[in-house]
Amino acid sequence: MENIISQVQHLAEELKAYVNLRIDLVKLTIAETASKMIADTAATIISGLVFLFVLFFASVGLALFLSSVIGNSYSGFLLVAGLYLILGFLIWFLREKWIRIPLMNAIIKQLFSENGKNGKN
View: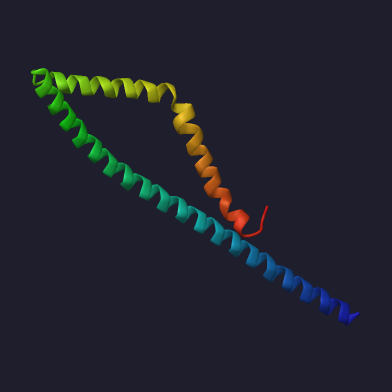
């Protein structure tokens, strides 16, 4: 009888250690996924800022070029602004297809890609 009680106590200790290890694994997995998502977000923001600087200077250059071709100092800037207005409306009306769905898919893929590597479902 004492042997069975000893085995049950040992089993309980092993089960407690297993549960604690699983909790630690979940914490580490969450930390890894969150840190990867934060790093990807930071890289995207930095790349986006660089792209915005390039876009700004290219827009000013195009506006100055168009102004010199047309002959008015303001007409090139108005044409570039009109192009951006059209682009803005296009993005606004297609935001679901171009932005929301791809962004949601990227986040879901990022969250669940780690589970496949660890052999989990």
